Length: 192
Image (tube, rainbow, N blue to C red; front, side):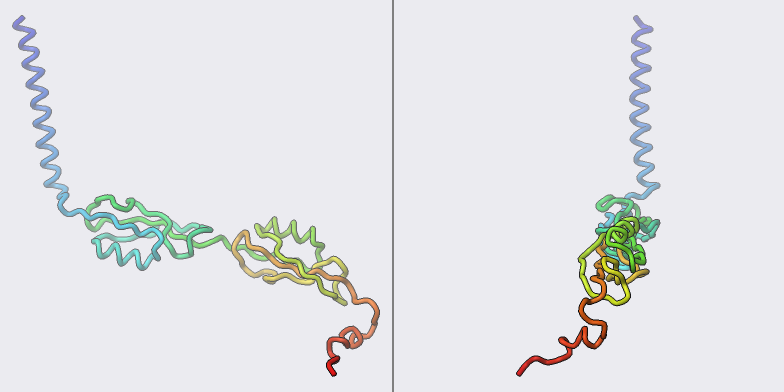
């Protein structure tokens, strides 16, 4: 019986010493780490990098861009995400790491002249673009049902997913071989 009581006393003493050690350790760590010098992390998402740098500086924090990625929804130069997250208490002069948007991914408009509408549509889709409006015009140079041009023009950079308008040839205008005769009605004024 004495052995059991001795064992229980020893176990209780160890538990009490453990808790006292834990409390002393936490108190000492608070003094060493100096938690009184903490700042609340501001929310800088959606801000430009320079504005975010000023906001962080006003809160005794530094700002560092760790990555830039394309983003369809967030404008170029704006912050997408941050670490530590907004509202978290952090030590003064800690660095807030951010990911900045490069805006939407840009692609070149492919050369579409003299292609059929079907060929042009396939080429646009392969480039990450979509076919926009179609206009039809007469052309002495481009065969009927072939593309004359596109808007925006070939090799221009546009955001991925943009629409490209096309102009489709109706072929040569019928009824006249003389270029002046083709446009005579447009040039003459029929008003009395």
